[in-house]
Image 1 (cartoon, rainbow, N blue to C red):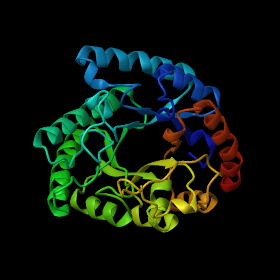
Image 2 (cartoon, one colour):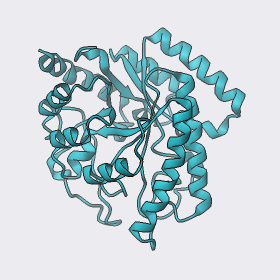
Image 3 (cartoon, rainbow, N blue to C red):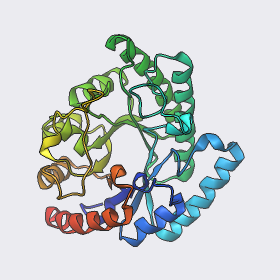
Image 4 (tube, rainbow, N blue to C red):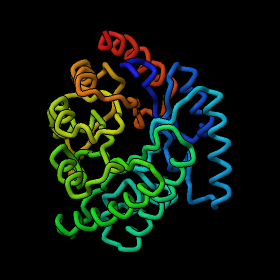
Length: 309
């Protein structure tokens, strides 16, 4: 497959303001012209823990039929967050993702592993790319980084073994401030869990916000990059921290509305031979998802066509 717009998708995590179902979000994404979709496996769109085995299987089958009708390819199943576990509660202080692989509570780590396995099962049933993205989470408070890292590696390794059995690729998504937050962290984790079914969900904006040289990061992590997220980030977000928590923060913007070298990034993916999908991820624009869905496609279409020449 050549470098073309056929490989551009949009993530449903922009449609989480409570007014959309997963089916409605997929239909709107297809209407905008995208060929792919990333499915958020979290509330309010798809909370797998709320279904038993038969219900999950039936839902995957019905969703598959809709996606076939819409002509949408499943680029990724997003298992990064699990906020549905806490319901209306915010969870532990400093944690915004739900239970994590490095949680100080052994039971919550085990729960995260179980939920990730459900996500892997769903990805295997829904077909197409069979990618599941995950995040490491923060280092828990009052826990040493080496201890948290060990917990995380053990938990993810168990999930990778399960993914191998299901022929699904589990992909770590580095994010500034997390245990796996930049290219060096990703390289370390990939070296410790060496499996063809374990790779990177390369969120371009996250590496930029972490201060990494994004094209160089692509070349360092290639060929373990199995899926790519696209957005733009403002240069002022590099190194920015929240005044109350002291944790790194950044905002995902419509491609072209920030300062990232998007053309150079896409040219690098082209040059290394990446043949996967690119998914626009604008979760922080849930207050106007339709607008950013359309705007992103209009910005990226001519850019992809130019880079392909």
